[in-house]
Length: 248
Image (cartoon, rainbow, N blue to C red; front, top):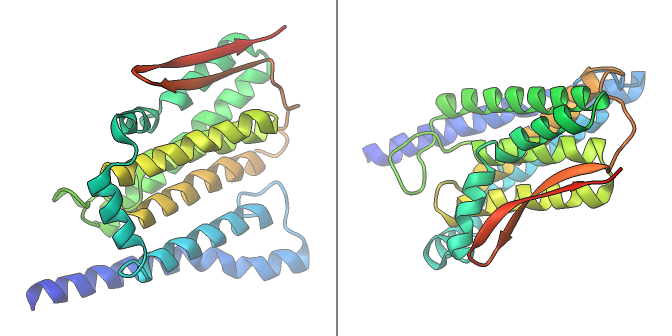
């Protein structure tokens, strides 16, 4: 009985924070009517990202008994990513974010300074927001007693990385960046470190801050998309590393 009461309270807290996350959506109609400024964090694009991600998270959580929970159990027992899941863990620990900042500072001046600053701030703010939620919601992890499951920090920073890369670089660089971020999120479920709704909301936070910090900067981060230099992780059989490409 006590366990059921605690579970109901945790569920109530979870719903409250999702509702709070949805509050900015009240500005959507106003933004449409008055014309949302592209130079603000909460514009139509970031609000749409937040709305879609929050709705997906809430739907996944409220229906998890029938849909996501069986999938989580299957992935947790079958481990479809096998030994490659460890690369998802590595890539979710700020590795691509740090590499991007470094190569932009070294090889892409002067625009690289602004792109590296954008990556740093998007990663920092999204990680801080995620950690505030972790220690407020206090959701228990699938495979331990640690109450820091919601949302996924690895997925948050991975999608912050992907969104910044997609903003500043052509689609053929942005798509692999999002694929990498998705791989990070899947690996967290594969390793029983997070639930699917943790990953979904982490992706929402990372993407929202990636675009939000871009628009909030005004014209500061608005530079031409470039493809002269990029860095991507290399994952293969019994090998791992980083691929650098530089053209001039």
